[in-house]
Image 1 (cartoon, rainbow, N blue to C red):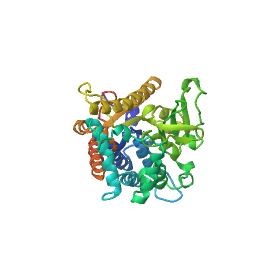
Image 2: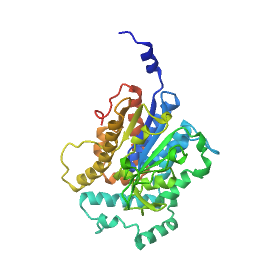
Image 3: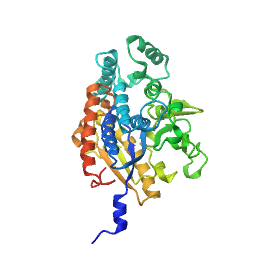
Image 4: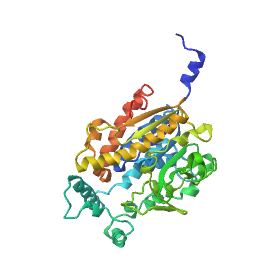
Length: 379
């Protein structure tokens, strides 16, 4: 059957893409590699990138790409700037080789591995090692870290973000920003699912503090901020709840990992034709977990995946047509060899391994796009 002029026009239309980055600790270095290749393809005008979203480690990657693309008073912007920023941020986030950071990372990582093996490390259960960040002992320990040569940015996430995105409020030319950023977090005290949105920050959408709209009674829609990104990555065993105004926040893993339904609300120019999910947590397992290591790993994966699929169910329920969702995920061999403990491995070697995996997978995936599977068959 011959192609009609309408079909030809549709085929030539530049697809609008939003990229959603799942959380997953240091496994999120895979996302860095994926985003590097996506940005290279975007720079070649293979599609239009209209938005990014992320939760936890995915929020860090999404922020760095968005910030690299955003017009600024000072500093480069564009695809290459975004590539440079997301890679540099993660390189700065890992333990610096041959320093006390390496030793601290090794101790932390080994403690989590010891818990998986059900063997206490030095007679101390890693459950105890999972510090209470409110305790005086924890505060005293962190206060002495700089004197040991450990960078403040290594253990203070707020300091890290401020260093990576200096003068965030004033350096971005907000009125010229043309990419949307959504960050997922969980409000602890009232139990709100929370999204920090760049469109609320620019005044294109209103702030919605929960318990107002019956369709989203337990949901907040707040302005984008670095504090919101820090909130998205706040694991309660490592950091006190991030306070923003009168609310307190933990990791978005518990609520929206990552947020996506908001891509379909607001100005039409930001509505994607396709959402690409960079998945970190495997959807399926070959057997019921029966060891401490497997149980911990699967519990964490289920928390992240169930919130992901809840978000997708809402997307398809409200907007079943004219939207394609696809998944980019690591190879089965790599996924099978990762454990919950390796989400806390901040070594350079592990970063490079996961980042290269992301680049290899994304390069092959993009070479075949749009002739690649769609969700849920590709999950």
